[in-house]
Image (cartoon, rainbow, N blue to C red; front, top):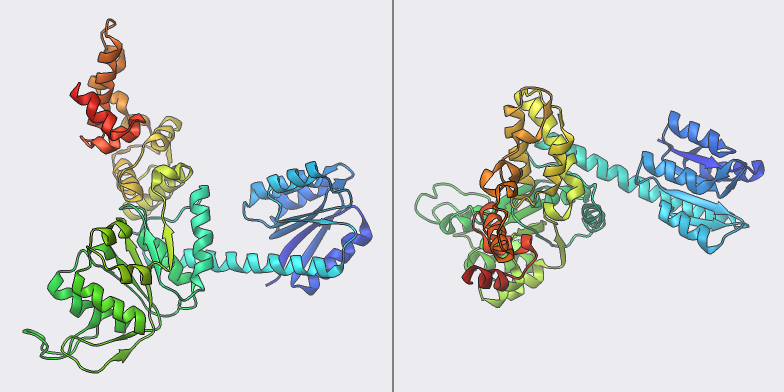
Length: 447
């Protein structure tokens, strides 16, 4: 498949040269000689990449880049100019230009840029294919949406680390989608065609965890009437995701350390070491560094797993993703349950974006499914939202009912109590929402 490259250049000879070089690098070039024709060409078909001159008969190339980026945010765009100056450079990169080439230039420079663009496009194709696989594998998983800068940065890091066969440690609050990120890394890696297994270390009893991970021989313990291969063996050639690794027992931590160091295991009740080739992706919703400090987690295992840590931002730090996620869950609800709602009213969207989502993506998903079932039409309005998201619905919190002669201290006290109710009594969260230190909140509650 050839990549579609749009060349916008009023110099006919230069345009033909760029098209020829592009063809040699596996691109199919379309040529336009002014802004108007370039805009029309992009409206007919969004290109995969863009080369544009800065000075054009009816405008400038920065406007062309902005238009291309509006169509596809990730589109690689290169600005060409014979009159480079600081304002032009700043404007180009603010518009999202990948590179700026100053005339005259060597053909090798163009070839290098084209090869770089090709690498970016191939990486994007692999990422899109991995996302598609995620959707096909399990539609019950939270959606991966990366409209926010925080998530775009995380996705970029996932793409980079996927090809490095090292352990990865995912850190994030409950409900942020650690399993989804782990699966994305697997699907972007060279192990994508190998097995994928996951286990929640906090959900497996201490007595069964060793057998679950490392397997056992027949007769190893009461009830072991046959040999069993553990998840580490089953994941040979692929990836094993260890969720809530912070909940692993000291015994499991010791055995995992030996495995990560040597890539060998011994089944429970066995004698012979078994070599397997497994990539470990671990996740925690707590600070493992703090667990090391208090002695509940092995320091040497922490260092082995923490080769490449990735932090998944909570939903309150990626508010640009809230409405797109909600729309995705709304579409899933229609597909799974036959619900009729297809959109959120503007006031509802605003309230969803303002809420802090302590349960993160999972909380949003559950709420959207509930709202979709409750909605009788095609639009979910503010009135369907629960009180914690729509505080005006709680009459005791309605500031319009406050007595007019309240002192400032009394008003502050009422506002603190209101915030505590919204946080279900969680003083740390209430202090965060009020913008004060927890110690200050405790003092004000005592006064």
